[in-house]
Image (tube, rainbow, N blue to C red; front, side):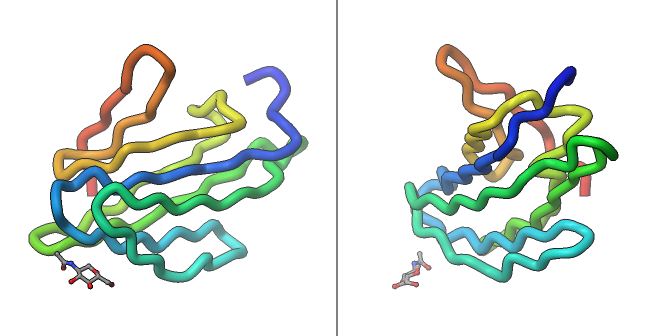
Length: 108
Ligand SMILES: *[C@@H]1O[C@H](CO)[C@@H](O)[C@H](O)[C@H]1NC(C)=O
């Protein structure tokens, strides 16, 4: 990414059918606490990416009945979005674009 945006919004949707999803996101300095999303529910947070160091990294733990995984939800090297929309499925999170979703498998 050449110029990171001034402000990034990460928006997370629970699309795990009929299950509640607990989301707990952090970066090195901030713990955003736990949020419970019902099926179809949304949780958003925003921050200013670190323009000079290019090190902004937010990771989240996603827990539901039958699963618990963590994922780097915003990685300044990987992501090129100012509104970063994720649909979280049992198989992994999908970055939502206008015409398609890019899905990732859980690694942790
Ligand atoms: C999800 O959470 C809501 C409120 O927190 C609760 O009323 C509901 O029973 C939960 N649903 C499931 C499927 O666990």
